[in-house]
Image (cartoon, rainbow, N blue to C red):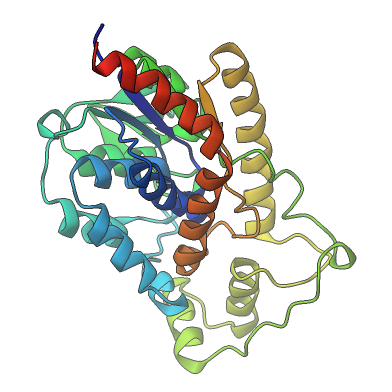
Length: 315
């Protein structure tokens, strides 16, 4: 008997999805390396970087970001179908992986996106890796959609937040899924009394000017409103990012439950990252550590997988 092929399904979750890096690192430390990777949204970014052999560079870059660096990705457009065009983030990712084609990667990889016109699930397993990753990350209302092969594509989390089915279709015998959506419903809309008090740092002149320029407004209170919603201002009134994040969490949680009920993975990992906000990429180190911790909690189950794989590999 041949060695079973392991598929790793990396789910959507915005900044929380940086925990995928910790999951991959911890699995490798246990001797578990995926033969197939399918990713959705941020899972496509991390999975694509790993499949291309550039996860080290991605981790180093992410862990060096601060809040101002994150704001620098806001190439704001009010006419593109999203608040952020995504071109700056795409350029940085291209610096790591170059113009690699998916079919040339050493590890089979696919990303999932959604056809904005038909609602169809689109599997991106050929062509430029950077294009597939960017299309899969097109979070509605935040990132502008991507036009590819005559289709307008948005975030794959609308249809398949944890792409287990893609791993199986690509030939995986065992699928390990990383689900980031299970603990998030209502978190963003919790009241002030439900959460510990948190003091925002004062807005700096540089930060204020940067936001003002990108949002094309000179109204300081408007800039402060957007900034406070990004960095978890403690108020009882939900703001723009609160509502957007909560709506997406509810949708993806329900879709994930439904899809995983019909096609469950062999093992599901759920990093504890619900404290990390939608755009808090500067908390990458915290998210990565949560991924490590998640794998450590599942060591017993993962050890059983290793025992299943190793005897067959030597048969």
